[in-house]
Image (cartoon, rainbow, N blue to C red):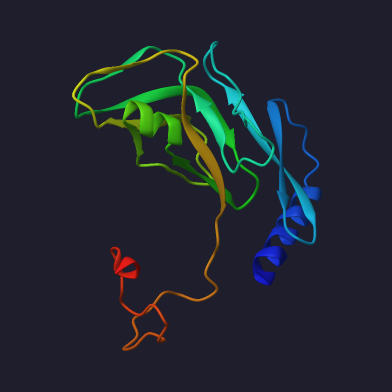
Length: 181
């Protein structure tokens, strides 16, 4: 945890040294730890007249909801790219992950696929939605379709290489539900 706090503090210091004027809409991102609070800026560029800024229903929510800008039909057992009409500039060394909105997944059967946004990506954010139902689903403009979660982009200090053994842990090689048995 201490290394994450140090990393976030470094990000804050780097951002404080940037004195460029921002001409796009800004969202202030506040990262809180038990000991301190850091404000980072995420800028959002409007690419479509009906685009909406990412929104949070509650300050304590982890992700920002993203909205569709066009009518899109997702056929049964199929997928479609859905436009959001926005491009995002994340804080330095921060990227984004697109995840399902729990209500959309549980009530409509729509799931987000392929959702990593690299820190240096500047194009429009599209959301790849999978329809897991027997009926086509129509997405209307303004519908909240996914959530955007910020994620630090960690850099390794050494190159990745092969080893003969890994450290033992209490979990070991257990996976795919092994902790439930």
